[in-house]
Length: 256
Image (cartoon, rainbow, N blue to C red; front, side, top):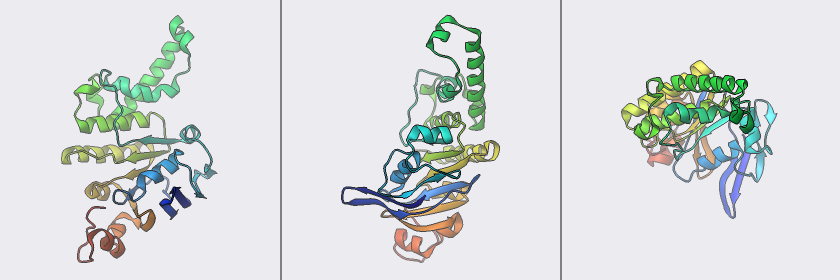
């Protein structure tokens, strides 16, 4: 992201923001409500036009590329609001994400041609691998409506993983989770990075989770970049402390 500026009428949501994610890293984007984090996510995924700046992904300028092109290049994303079908099992929900691997049309499915079964086996295998990666294998045949909130969050992770992303954007993945569920989420995110080689960028308010899982962090404040670098250094940055605590007598910026 280089010099990104986004305006909504007279409101500047992002003001000349530049940062990058190192390949294979887990990076956190921090800031209070209204800081411009979700707007920045929308810019990255191609859902928000920019007034100025540029976006490059894996060496390619994608500033003008629509969302579906970015997805094909290897971007996956989860959203703050869950979107699962309660009547379907975990496996069936995740298979929706693996549908890009299907190689047949409606006519072939109706006729039951041999390659349909082969394609279905392939998508099911991809879905099962994703489910295993987030630690939900034992719940594969469980209806999504029976899952606690934390498991639903991991289900969405598995579905996004089925897109075989190079970069996975997680928008407040720990929202509404208790401590145990947050720890499960941390293990899932680490597993996705370590075993699937996926680069992760997440927006998050839970600083304990950020400390546990991210190597790098950037802080937005009123749409501008306040600090960036190694997570520990950023969270101890006097400017970050002063902005979110109001004074510099603590090492923990509350409310970021």
